[in-house]
Every structure is written in C-alpha cells, then in structure tokens.
Image 1 (spheres, rainbow, N blue to C red):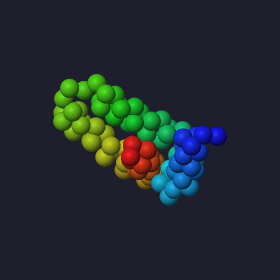
Image 2: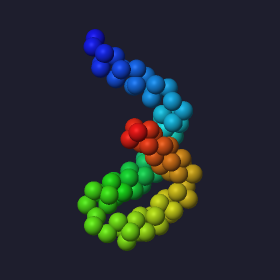
Image 3: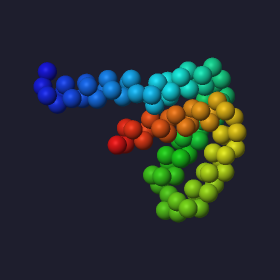
Image 4: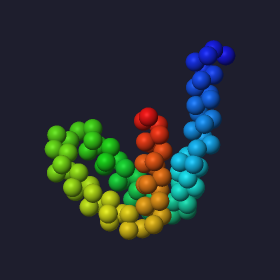
Length: 94
C-alpha cells in the first residue's frame, strides 16, 4: 500500500472514531426509527444544498431556510440529527 493510501486509511479511521462521527451515527440511528422525521430532515438538507448551489440571492433564500430550520428544529430528534450532520460536515470540509 502506498503512502497516500495509508494516509487516507488513517484519516478515515480517525474520522470514524471522532466524537462528531459517533454522535452523527447515534442521531442517525434515532431518526431512522421515525421515517416521517427523517424525511422532513432530508427535505431540509436537500433544499439547503440546492439553495447554496443555485441561488443568486442567498440572503433572501437564507432567511426562508432559517425559518424552515427553526420550525424543523423544534423537534429534538430532527435538531440533534441536523446539528450532528452539520458538525460532521465541518470536519470533512476541513
């Protein structure tokens, strides 16, 4: 195995044992028990992604999306899932 592949495998191992990844997995397992909540969270994530990718007016759409997040996040299962997913994504972006 080359040095690059070894480094990749080490990084994957570190990510999979991180608190953020473990919390994401816990939140994911919880939300999967409630398919309507998972569907609502996934819809929010999809809309967020599309807004960032396509929107020329991020401020206007961002305000609307923030209101959607506030409504969705009133449910602690959805809030935990979205927050843990966001924390994991921050690590992966770095």
